[in-house]
Image 1 (cartoon, rainbow, N blue to C red):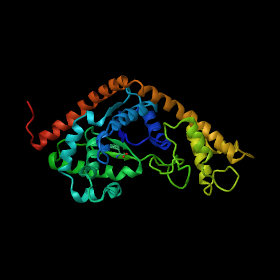
Image 2: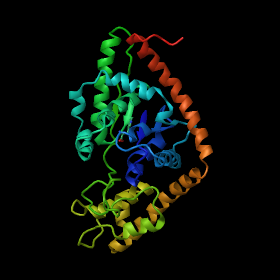
Image 3: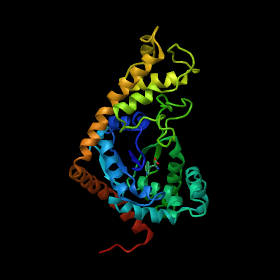
Image 4: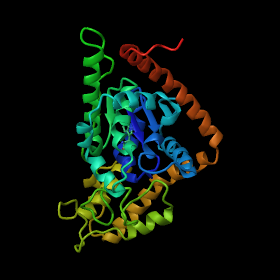
Length: 331
Ligand code: TRP
């Protein structure tokens, strides 16, 4: 199982609940690879000192959320050179037509006007390389990334047909997207009909994993509910439902039980309690991330080990690709 985070994205409590929290549980049962995709960041923004800090921060946050470098392979994409190499090879097999259909490209290219970076167009092909290098079975991603995993599958099939026709063992495993089962979808605190998003311009809408207790308190105090007063889990009370959902997933209690405890109480109580629960969930993550960020040499050791483990596997795939494509092996 393999997934990745773009280090320029601050992680939200929605990312934690919808993804990272589950990965932490799965790492004992699956062979897991997680990495920070710094090469993807530069498809949209220039490289910078800030990128270095963000990349450390992404790795530190992963660890603080429970990803254990002894149980999984944790690394930085640019440390494993095969990502860029396989991306180039796949670029030569992908077509302008199929890549043009990617909806994320259509969205992200808008702001670049006439000067769209080629890397932004190639973004999904680099992602395909990320996945195919490791003979990945499962790719847990949000629904917004499903189209990219489908492109990855198409490219894998095309390469397999071209270079390893049956009965040869295929060059690449065909990966499956693993879309998290619906249930615990966390909505914006300001517009509970919209998903909580890291890029919401309304700063009160989103809880981040590095928010202070004060931030959390303020955001929940101002969370949008409705003009009623009863605390119920109902379709016409999406704001109340969102707070109940947060409580339920973070404390592992059924919503009905939480609702029962609020008989006769007001929205104010619900908000204060939810703030406390979110603080208790975020605080240890924030504090551990800060501690790790204070010891970059420790993070460097982890990243070095991760890169070694990942490179070893990536090299096996790439050597076979190069061989099948007719490149002379370097002696
Ligand atoms: N594109 C993904 C996102 O924005 C990040 C990503 C890059 C990724 N490479 C990947 C996710 C490989 C899963 C597997 O979320």
